[in-house]
Length: 323
Image 1 (cartoon, rainbow, N blue to C red):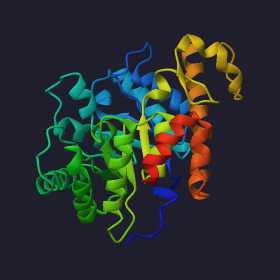
Image 2 (image 1 turned 90 degrees about the vertical axis):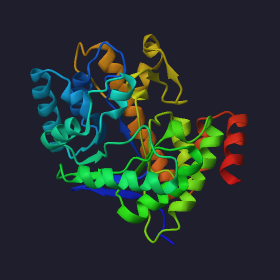
Image 3 (image 1 turned 180 degrees about the horizontal axis):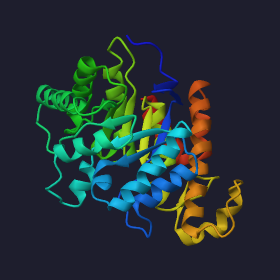
Image 4 (image 1 turned 45 degrees about the vertical axis):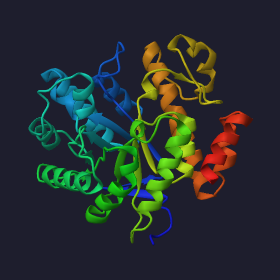
């Protein structure tokens, strides 16, 4: 059996409290800001961790590459942890069949990062054994092309995920093991049940393996999944809406006037509207994750969950969590 649940993750010279949330940057999000703009804003805000896409770095202009390098250098001076995704998410949704592992390797060698996810397989095999073999081979191959730490991503049919995760973790002892939230089941209750099975499977190992969920940025989902053993998350919600600090609910950008009083941090005069909203959202996640970390550490997550849910919602979630 593993040690007790980890409450921190050591990456390079930085210690991240767990659970943690990486705001994601992706060109799949259609706004009037580019991925480069988002990366610069994260640097300006001195946010302690975030995820960028190798695909977006590879497909930006020379000028944008210079801007990204400057922003990442600034973030590293603040001690930020930079997580790089393989770019397959963007390649998949943009139906770009030219995006290959070699493109990923070129970026991961030249662009600053502390962690990266492996070049994952969106068309995985159909058994626990072959899924694990495929993921392990990809991690080993990618590790030969970077000085950073490569973490596995597991895709597969929902029922195969617990066994596949255990086999991969047993062989690699990864710093993080990632699974896309969308592959955990159809709804939040089903996903809670799948995460419980994955965590139970991982806890059969000698050492604790932190579980990262790809594409999870909804506050209620983050709390519920943390309660059943997920440790790390990334998501795009921070740059797609305005978040009400009191409820965690997401609103259209035009509604920021209703919530701007919740942001205490002073912004430069004439700071652009969209960037102001995103700073407001980053402030929410910074405080929200700190409070969630404390709730997990103090074993008081149910109280924290009830702050962001109705009585009926909390009852449904807690029943699934305790089953």
